[in-house]
Length: 388
Image (cartoon, rainbow, N blue to C red; front, side, top):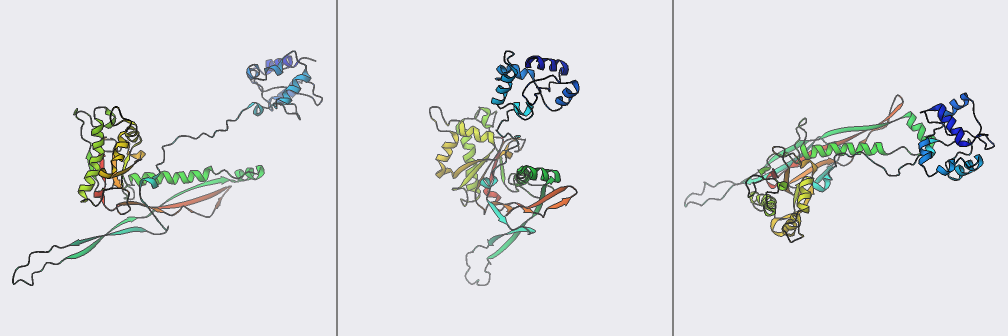
């Protein structure tokens, strides 16, 4: 009887670079040479990698000084041996990383934390609001003139957004259903999650940037919002925050000036409190980590929030779409009150799922979601600064 290592070496010499044979064991546990046709059948069933044996923790199990029975016993103890067929399969030499990894996509902004939201029941065609106004001013009365009295009046204007539907679905093949039934496992939920993410992506894109195809404006390109270029720093050559030419006081002033413009334009109706500052990720990180002055641990962001009573700013949020979206592809800052009477996103209460459809050997699950755009009622209560 030839040794295990001799047998493996002869087999390797035969299969050269194919490396798929491990060894074949008879029912009595003894290794025996096989004819070439039997080796060919074995090659289609098992895999052997000599390099893994030479470098693995199981190297001692192939010690040529061990008997065949000792080698078999070692392999069984190690859990790398199939006792029924006497074969070591490639999957038995494989370690599966339990961590789940996913492709990195552009992050989805938690828009419910960024914008006021109003939900509506699916099925409506339009979302309309009325803006009321009063006119008239008293005049000095003239003696003897009792008929020439100016009239006060009240009027209303209507503004509407259309409601549009998006559709998205997923499918399972009949084979996928059979395999899940045989394996006794539930169907994977990743496809449903993909549908939810697909709606979230479209919702985010339309909510922030609108959709020119259907005439919708978004949070970033809303009509009537004051858009101001950030001033140059004291050096007079750079207006960006990370450019290192602006002082930290000048950066803080860029932010508080935007809040001040809101109070001035709305006669103090908005901007006294509850103002939100939306920034791109890089600009948010910059003011969150840059100290206001040397010798202090207070960052620019902390300094502004600590003075909320005077500047009206209560929070900062990240909106990824504000990167390279301002005039001249610059970073954009938007300051606004987090109030529904100023702006709100109109979103259907839920995704509507259609009855399952059988199409050939596939089972289709279709869905629909409605969106009514972003309504900006008081554009003068919002302020944009680009070039930061």
